[in-house]
Amino acid sequence: MLRIGMLTSGGDCQALNAAMRGVVKGIYSKTDDVEIYGFQDGYKGLMYSNFEMLTSKDFSGILTRGGTILGTSRQPFKLMREPDANGLDKVEAMKHTYHKLNLNCLVILGGNGTHKTANLLREEGLDIITLPKTIDNDLWGTDMTFGFQSAVDIATDTIDRIHTTATSHSRVFIIEVMGHKVGYVTLHAGIAGGADIILLPEIPYDIDVIADVIERRAQAGKPFTILAVAEGAISKEDALLTRKEYKKKIAERKYPSIAYELEQQIQEKMDKEVRITVPGHTQRGGSPCAYDRVFATRAGAKAAELILNGQFGYMVAMKNGEFTQVPLGDVAGKLKYVDPDASIIKEAKITGISFGDE
Ligand SMILES: Nc1ncnc2c1ncn2[C@@H]1O[C@H](COP(=O)(O)OP(=O)(O)OP(=O)(O)O)[C@@H](O)[C@H]1O
Ligand SMILES: O=P(O)(O)OC[C@H]1O[C@](O)(CO)[C@@H](O)[C@@H]1O
Ligand SMILES: [Mg+2]
Image (cartoon, rainbow, N blue to C red; front, side, top):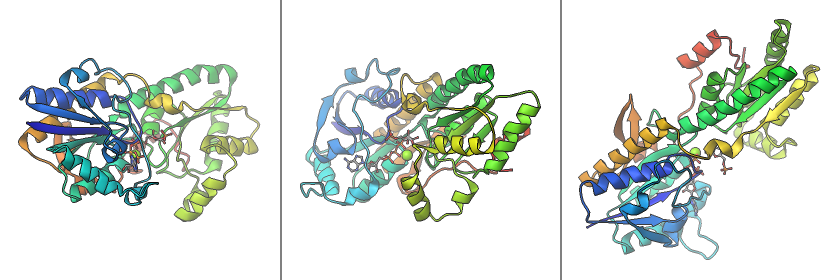
C-alpha cells in the first residue's frame, strides 16, 4: 500500500489541478494499491489534520480547471517556527499528522516560499517530492514553472487591449504586472504585447529616461506610450536604499502601488494624460494555457516516477526542455531572477524597448 499526502501552498495559479492529476494518473498507471490524502489549504491542512481521502476519480476532469481543488494558504516562513495562537508547535504538528497517517511521502506543489518549508520538513525526516508552481517563474533550479505561461498570456492580452484605447486617446498607459521581486511575467508580456517601456525589479529605472522616451515617441508621431511595469519596479534612487530603508519607504508610500507613484512622477515631468491598468489576480485565474497543461502533466508524471522509485527529497524541474530532479536543499531559500545581462534584454533593447535605465 502506497500512502501519499498532497498539498498546494502559496498563491494559486493555473495548472495546479493539471499537475496533481498528472501525479495521480502516473501512480495509478502502475498500481491501484494507493491511498491519497489531500490536505486542505496548504500546510494548514497538515498542521491541523484537515484532509480528505481522494481517489483517482477525484482527479479526473480537472486538467483544464483553474485554482486548486485542495485550496491553499500562505504565511511568512519565519512564522513556521512560532507556535500558533493555541501554542501548537506547527512543525511538530505537521510531522505528527504525517506519521499518524503512516504516509510514504508528501507531494507539495508550491513556489519559493513553499520550498523553504518543504525543505524544513525534509530535514525533519519526512519524504518529500515537490512540483514547481508559480506564475512568477522565480524558482531556482528549474528553467520554467507552471502558471507562468498562462499568466504571461493574460497580461499580454491586457496590454493588447490597452494598446487600442491608448492609441485612440494618445495616452500614456501604465500596466502593472504581478511580480514583487522578479520580473519574468512583465518582461515576457511586455515583449509579447509590444510595450514601449518595461520596468523590472532587476533593472532600476530613471524617471528622466522614461520621460525622454515618451517625449521622443511623441516627436516621432507616436503620441501614446505603453509601460509594462512589474509590481516591484524600483527607481535608481530607491535601489540605493538599504532593504530596511526601502521597506519603510514602501510602508509609508501614499500611493497604492508603484504604478500610481510612476503616474505622479510622469505627470510632474510632462503634460500628458496617464492612465493605469492593474490586471491583478486575473493573471492567476482561469484555465491553464496549453503550454502549462503539457508542462504540468509532464511534471506530474515525473513526480510519479520518483515516488514509485522511492526517490525523495527532490523538486521536479525542467532543464533544457527535459524533466529532471533537483535536491530540495539546493532549491530552498534561493530565487531565480531575470539576469539584466541576458540576451533577451539585449534583444528587447535592439528592437527599441526601453528598460528605463539608459
Ligand atoms: N498555515 C500556515 N502557517 C504558517 N505558514 C504557512 C501556512 N500555510 C502556508 N504557510 C507558508 O506560506 C508560505 C507560502 O509561500 P509564499 O507565500 O512565499 O508563496 P510561494 O510558495 O512562493 O508561491 P507563489 O510565489 O507562487 O505565491 C510558505 O513559507 C509556507 O510554509
Ligand atoms: O495573492 P496575494 O497574496 O495577493 O499575492 C500576490 C502575489 O502573489 C503572486 O501572484 C505569486 O507569488 C505575485 O506575483 C503577487 O505579487
Ligand atoms: Mg513565491
